[in-house]
Image (tube, rainbow, N blue to C red; front, side):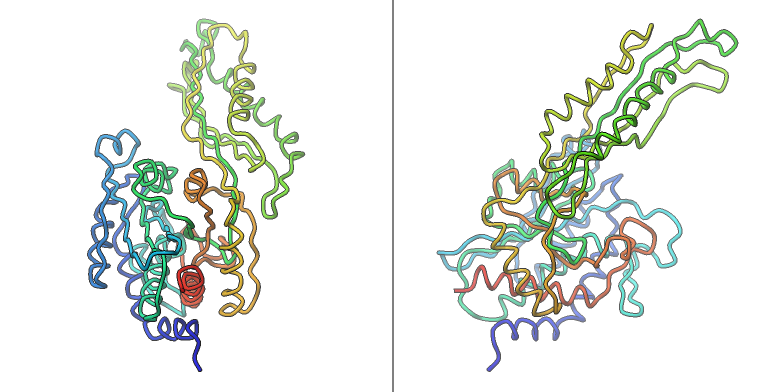
Length: 410
């Protein structure tokens, strides 16, 4: 006798060519962020799911809010699938915004080309693939025809690359959703249960321009900025001594990723701007870390004549931490992965950060799992020729569908 989970797997196999075709459609509508004109992709997805008899609620973030944020358009989608009363609401979240493709592609970045078992395109691995994973896992579940309890929500959002505050963060702050469990787009075979926090600061060093032949007439902002750089990088050995207890996460990191300033070769620099990134392990308190970093920067230029600094926070992304209920998601995903992948996939942390943290900040247990490769580098994620092994898409769809059955089946 065929079990319900075997029937789910058979349905996914029978519809897999259709799933790949849907992923190709998803890849062919660009969503480069910046500039972040992502509403057209959301409109396409809403039309796509209409063919399944689903209604995608369109939640457009106000234009001025989006522009002030540094993007052009954001329309987030919620597809609600209510079942019988008495069960939990499970949300599946994937993001459609992507970093620009860059150079050196041998396949068209928005072509969705399939070759030798791989599909190529920007966001093939992170995370338009999981639009397809979650849509077809849901379709398989509903095609099973068994009684279901609770509800399922598909959250397709468009602000992961800028931090998520106008993606999942917007849906949650506007009280448009409050699921009981969340599975968010993955980027590896692992189940991610925790990730680092991230603080990004913009440091503007103001001095005074002067002629290069008479440098004493100016106040060198670059010389002051060098003191800040030295102070930041002198901290790295101490940060390496701080260790997380979460597998997959090591130590805090800190770096300056961009420096702009000066007027010309023969002019004393009157202004220099540094952009820095401080990753925090989940055990650290972001408020304490930010205060320490600001004090470090201020002390580095203390007493320097004619020098003034401004420190602006660009981003404060909190850590994803395990919540009560996370273990239920992990147990189900691992059990189903054992069946369809043939091994017990680990549950661990990652030094990256994602917008799944925003669900955690609302007390909702969330994990990252989807059609990811074994490692991020092998997928070329955020690089040229980003790709996804189609068998990974097939397996992940089966794992997610069976996990939904575990939570929503009677």
